[in-house]
Structures are given as C-alpha cells and as structure tokens.
Amino acid sequence: MKFTPEAALNFTRKSVAIIISWPPPINISKKVSILLDIYLFVSFLLSQVLLSTLVYGMYIYDYQLDIVIRSSCVCVTVVQTNIKMLIARLNRTNMQQIVVEMETVIREATPSEKAVLEKYVNRSATLHICLTFGFYLASINMLIGPLFLPQPFPGYSVFPFKTDTHPIYEIAYFAVSYPGLQSSAAATVDCQVAFLLWFAGARFEMLKNEIDEVLNEYDLKKCIIKHNHILIYAENIINTVRYLIFTAVIVASILIVFSGFLFFFVDSFIIKFQFLILDVVAVIQLYLNSNPAENLIEMSTEIGSAVYNLNWTDKSKMIWRNMYILMQRSQKPVILSVGGFLPALSLSYYMSYLSTCFSYFTTMKAMMQ
Image (tube, rainbow, N blue to C red; front, side, top):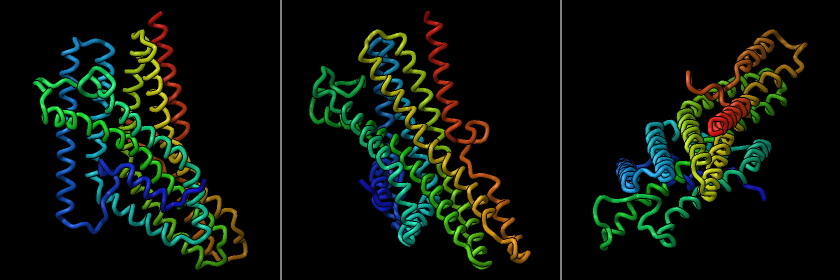
C-alpha cells in the first residue's frame, strides 16, 4: 500500500492533536491562541492530579516494590508529556514556519520531487502507523482496566477523599484518565520528530537530483542558493526538535532501568513480560529518530559528491569557484546533537546505546548471582 506525502502529514498532525504538539495554523486569531493556552494549562493541572494520586497510591499500598516501580514509570511518562507540551509551546513559532514551508514544498513539488517524497513516506509509514496505534491502544487498555479489574481507577491512583458518589467519581476518573491518554500522544511526538527529519533529508536528496541535471552556470547558482536555504531550514528543524529527542532518550533510559529492577526483583511472569514489552518499545522509539538522523547526515554530505561528479573541466573559473563553495559547505554534515549531553544522533549512537543497555542488564544479573 502506498501513502502520499499529504496523507502522511495529515496523519501525523492528527496523531498529536490532543497535546497540540503540531502547531496551529500561522494565521489563527488571538482568541483561538488564548483558548489553546488555556487548554495546555488545564492539561498541566490534570497531570499534577494524576501524579499526586499515584504518589499517594504508593503510600497506601505500603511502598510495595512492584507498585512503586510501575507507578514511577507512569509518573515518568506523565512528566515527559508535560515537558514535550512545554517545548512544543515554546517552539510554536518555529514549528509554524517549518510546517508552512513543508506544505508549500509538498504542494509545489515536481513529479520527480514527488517521487522522492513518496519514497520517504513509504519507507517509514508502516512503522509510524503501527507505533501510533500501539501507543494509543496501550493507554486505552490501561484506562478501561477498572471495567474488568477490582480497582476504581486506572493503575494505582488513589484519592485522599471519598470518590464513590456521582458525579465525583466520574470527575476523578476523567482527571486521572485524560493525562494518561495524552501520554500516548507524547510518545507519538517521536513519530512527528522523525517525520520532520525525514523531510529534511528528502529535501537534500531532491537537491542532489537537481544538481545531477545542472547544465550551465545559472542552474548551478540556483542550486547554491537553494542549498543555503535548505541548510538553514534543516538547522531550524534541529533546533526545534533536539530537546524533544533528548527528553525521549532520558525517559527511555529511566524506563529501562526501572524495568530492569522489576525483571530481576519481581517473580510475576506477567509483570516481567509487560516491562519487557516496555523495553522493546523504548528501544524502537530511539531507532525511530536515529534512522532519519543518519539519513540526514548522509544526504547532506551527498551534495558535495554530486557536485564533484559534474564535468566542468572546460568551464570558467567562476563555475569552478561556485562548485568549490558547494563542496566545501557539504563537508560538514547536518547533525542532531545536544552539546555536552547527546552526541551526534545516528545509527552508530543507537548501537552504542543498545550496547550500554545490554551491559547494564548483564551487570545487574551478575550482582543478583
């Protein structure tokens, strides 16, 4: 099944709608903007309610190890949701500019450019769709748990007052359920970030194809101008998403540590299996962004190779100089990093991360023995 760039954009926008990670249109009214900010503020307050009931639940259940770790994992995902919502709000203007240009490029793409975009969409569509529905199904499964389990609320949330009367119970249930649903959207933000990185890589590949067809100095100058613009655009994307990725890496590491404790200190096979799945999802989430980041590095450097392969031996010195400018700019790849905390995100970093996680589990197993 093939997917179009327009369909991928609309799917990504809708998948994160409940936390407004995808920016609203750039021409929205001030009234709508205020309402969105009020919605974010209320969402933040509901998150604090959920966190408070989880902490109180740990106390009520006498700090049982499995309950403490499971509730702590939920707390981590809720905090992650708040951080991602805050980052998205602070970067709303940048994201609006990125999206406007993305929509323009998709709308005005030539047949050859359309083919490149469709190639990228179909490369990642299946994984993005499966993860998105998986995240939401996981939350829905937890939220409807009280319908089948002897517990009043999802997870181990406990209120410090009676909630068995109506409509207090319904209000309390909504207060702890909605932030949980938003946590699914927060996990799906990683698909949004990957979508932006794939698009940046696709723009470099489209430019590479255009350079392959350069016929004269005028065409080459157009490519130089476009290359400079794409570099600025890619850096804007990186500056907008770098802390979202850093947050995802930190949260994945914490969840892996917590699940490691459960795996070795809890006897229940069901709980072990649940957190093994959690580890797998955390690893996939990091791969989700490492792959397009690797592609961005590769495509940004391929521009220099495309220029080098042109035959300009009998052309003017002006053309030689322009070629040199393009090759020189392409020697420095476009990388996604957080200075001092996260090195260049790539498949190499992803493999080293997996190696570190494996070493962690090996060390913990040795300590247990």
